[in-house]
Picture 1 (cartoon, rainbow, N blue to C red):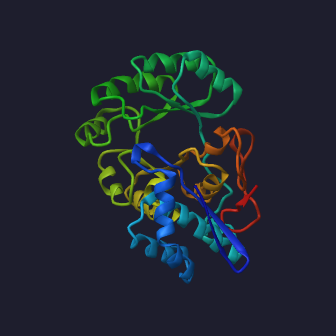
Picture 2: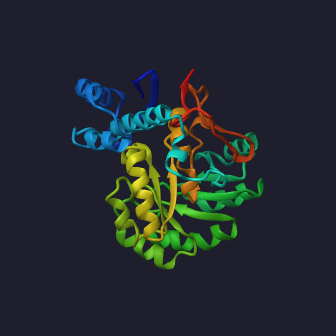
Picture 3: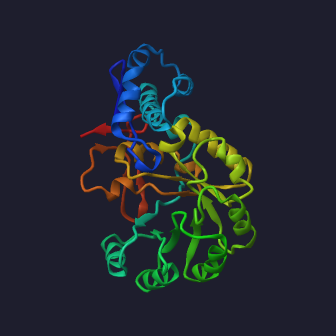
Length: 308
């Protein structure tokens, strides 16, 4: 779902993806927003933060709030004539390179995807009975860094057992190896795993960061799940104050959502913003991810988004 907010001749764009896992559909988001459309249009936009506080009082899903918050941030930056990362006083001369996701499939298909897009960092989706063997086979075809996303498929003992083998195979960290509610297991993994662990499904909103601090090595923030750039920035600050590594991930957004994520990368340790790269057809122009992960930021203010 794409949202646009217009003011003084400038248009800001935001996005949220429907997600059956969280019970969010295009129709539910559309209904939520239409219900308060008049209030949104009458809102006096001074800052994105004030707009987000207003949205938070309206009983919207975080997904709908995200789309509106991204649009407000893009609009605000365009009105100010500066990219968001500059308004936030961050330096984009250095930033983490996005990984490229290899979904679960046969070994042949996974290898073919890697060969189709040679990349310095791959995120390998796992959750089978032969996960270590899969990584071992993939390693034969690339020297790239691997990150493993087990999608809640393992238990604590499996994770601790797999970790040394995966580390030897060039895996950098494990993302959400256990079910989101298995806090006892994650505590055990944190104490005994030789690889760092990054929370995903266990870290959805701002209030989750505190608990993750004693159960994970870092957190993966999804804008759609937490409610946009405004809460994500607070989550980054909180996580860093606790000594956690910080990653921002995507949910196969178009360049609308990816350009918003890109504004945060000077503040991150890791980033997963390959969503638009995985689409057959994109719908917008904005931040460009070039060869070997180099990010080209548009001169246009905000997140730099224009719809095609």
